Amino acid sequence: MASLKYTPKQHITEIHSRLSKTFREGRTLPLEYRRKQLLQVARLVQENADDIMASLKADLGRHPFEATLPELGPMVSSALHAVENLDKWNSPEKPQVEAWRSGWDTTIFKAPKGTVLSISPWNFPWVLTILPLIGAIAAGCTCLIKPSEHAQASAALIEKLIPQYLDPDAYAVCLGAVEETTHVLGLKWDHIFYTGSTSVGRIIAEAAAKQLTPVTLELGGQSPVFVDGDSTNIEIAAKRILWGKQQNAGQVCVAPNHVFVQEQYQSALVEAFRKAYDSFWPKGPLDSSSEMACVLNARHYERNKSLLSRTKGKVVIGGQAGQDLRIEPAIVTGVKLDDPLMEEEIFGPILPIIPVANVDAAISHIQSGSTPLVIYVFTENEETKNKFVQRTQSGQLILNETFAQVAVYEIPFGGQGQSGYGSYLGKYSFDTFTHQRGYINVPADARTEGFMQGRYPPYSAPALEF
Ligand code: NAD
Image (tube, rainbow, N blue to C red; front, top):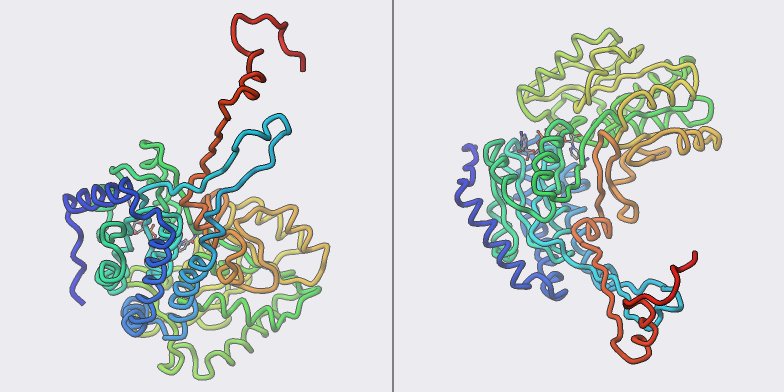
């Protein structure tokens, strides 16, 4: 397809002024308006499902099933979930106050932060652009979205459809790469929501700091898995891990990056991976019937191939590079922590297995690395579960499954440390774009004023005693 037409900087500045004006005029405040826009998001997805799936096919070779489950489905269900819960989320709170202040009206109002910016990556180019937008709409903000320039078909379709379905004075799209994004970051926003790599996350945080703009950073990292051979069903674990790893060819922020397993169970785990592999792809993952997603581009294709050629571990399953930017999921055994595979987030279909002596060794390795977005643990042992809860840090801790966290709107989705800060999904998205505004109305009646008398100068009473 033709390359993307980036938004001229002057036009970006004009969009910013338009969105800011709309916010100041209060147009996005009424809940009825927000509900209508949220329903329009759901309509946009439903009425254009085929085109959206085609854009994901063009950008990432995605099978329609892999387009529907993690992208189209969550966009519609998140928008409807926000519509259903908006009254509740937006209701002012009346905190319990001490008796002497019971006559004051003490309230926490849910105030939209204002005009916000969301910058998204290429790996889930729809859902990671639209879910933050849903939070911004629900909260009553106006919002500019900047999809990734690397998922060109998706970005072009997002730019075409958003103004057709949403109020163009309140929600807009700009396209561009580093130069345009740098310009966007120089404008004054009331919140910046960024999803992408840790290195660019630092640039975003620095730009935001100059204007004291609050930021949410949804970053990546090396999310580890621990398979407790002593207590888990290894076959089920292998199936669930391989399913998580092969989604979108491993280009998922919450993909299992590497697996720790007790040394004596490494070969049983490999056999279980082989069984799962054969059942997923009877003719092999590169056969046209398998419809595995591809890696983004030639650079990522070469990067994955280079990792496979440089590893000091043994590639025991898969790992062949095929046509059309497709690479077979690869299981690599006997990997050590200083292996080239462990230098950075793999973000591809390669799964290293790191044998360890026991659960404590796995925990100590995890503790010595940077804080991951998620830790996956496959165990039925209560002591092992407790050790992970108490002695590790991560955005989320998921037991006996991969990706459960993206389907559950009732827990916050977000990182910690190097994997980012802030969170979203469900009510947490609403909260991210909302300012909890304290409000106190103190009666000016004779009773209250009588109570206040003692505080006015000239002071007659001695200092208060505590
Ligand atoms: P990226 O950081 O290269 O790009 C993301 C966005 O940042 C794009 O819109 C891009 O235009 C913009 N950008 C890139 N360089 C910039 C610069 N110098 N200044 C300003 N803006 C810039 O990330 P990516 O490669 O698109 O995404 C992959 C990374 O994102 C992985 O690390 C992955 O783990 C992470 N990720 C995290 C989540 C999450 O929810 N935590 C979700 C998806 C991806």
